[in-house]
Image (cartoon, rainbow, N blue to C red; front, top):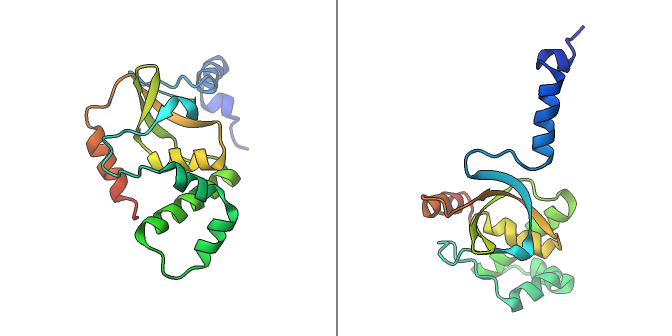
Length: 157
C-alpha cells in the first residue's frame, strides 16, 4: 500500500502552512508574487513590440457574435482580421476554461502594465472576466523587451 501524502512530504503543519501561503496568493520569489489582478487595474505596455493595440471599434466587433460568425465563414481574411478572430477564439476558450497561464505584470503607479501576456489580457477582457491570474513584479523587469519578443515569437499573427 502507498504511503499517505502527509508522511511522504513530512510534517502536516508544514504542508498546511505552505498550502495557506499558496491559497493567499503569496508564493513570492523576491519581488515576484502570484495573485489574481482586476482587469480594470491593468493596461497594455505601450512599448510592447507586438503592438496589438486593440481599438474600441475592434473590441465592439469581437463582442458581436453575428460579426464573428460572418467573418469566420469568410475565406479571404486580411491579416488584422485573422488576428482578431484568433483573439476571439482565445476569449471563447477562457469562457470555458478560465485563463490557463498567468500573465506577467509590473507595477506602474497605482496600476499595472502587462510585461507579457497581452493577448491573454485582451482575451480575458473579451471573455468578460473580472480578474486574471498574474505574476506581479514591483518594478519593470530588466529584460521585459526580450521576454516580450520571445513570447511573440511563440505566436503567429
